[in-house]
Image (tube, rainbow over all chains, first blue to last red; front, side, top):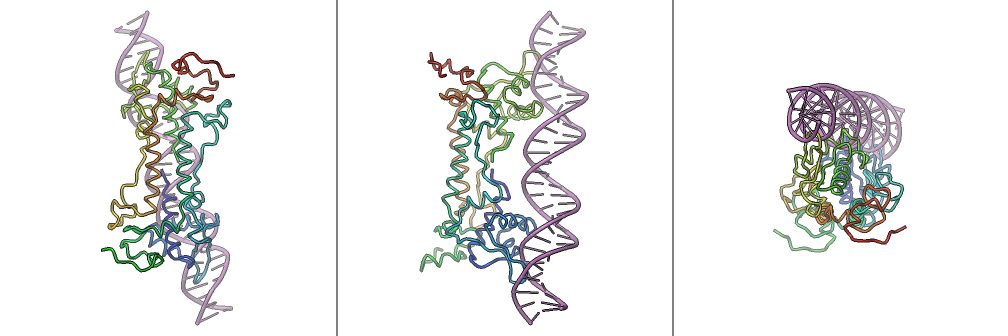
Length: 157
Length: 157
DNA sequence: CATAAAAAAGATAAAGATGTCCTGTTTCTG
DNA sequence: CAGAAACAGGACATCTTTATCTTTTTTATG
């Protein structure tokens, strides 16, 4: 239901959020996220054109988040590469329905609205800071560098 | 987010539900739902193989619902042609995550679960019987034949 | 300025989704 | 049984998505 491109874009911004506000090269992101480098480059171009990331060419260049992880929602990321298309009007083009969806399309659009709402309410910072034994992109929980922001921890085993 | 195939399949079963338990030919469904006939034929073949509809060849044949509209959920229809794929395990294949999703994939899967739940809770009968001025597939509200099941109505204008 | 690093852009390819057309097979009906 | 109606299936075409490779452009830095 979510495209590969969306999956890849989200992984990329998660990696960038870990390093934020430092830049990462496409190659570094590709390794950390296990996304094919050349394709990732295209995805990042899209995020760059959408203003989600800044790109800097040349030595010491790379990609970096344009906003802080606290301000960036996963909806913004998703909508930049593969927008959630709400059902605005009757897909059959029935004139009498117009913007007033039938019960079928009403439910479909309600589902889309629910996804949209969840994604709009989730920031990158939340994704990183949430206490969990499965840190995004990290094989070991202790590799999560954001753990330090939560203060001294007793190591989970 | 929902494929054309899903959209077409849902329109088709709505039309069949209107006529249930009578069969419709693929051509009749194609006209009522505004779906390309030849492609609809493929979609209906899928629904037939999944046991959602029965097909009958030859004169007076056609497609009919295998169940009553009260018993058929839109999730069953969707899953027959383009299954909602829940995220069962870490898409990166990280061993330490396993079935324990990270916060990112947790939210994505929660969204999928929400759609699944909504669709599982909606029967074709509900779609048809819901009071609305926009009856599925019908240009005029009064064309909804299920209106009769609700007993005598004062005609909305 | 020369060089190397890095993203941008373009060409191309493989796979899947969508859509069309034609032929084959089944089955009702007279 | 003959014929027509209807679905089944295969071949093919087109578009989009995903993916790769190569070349070009930009830019920091010695």
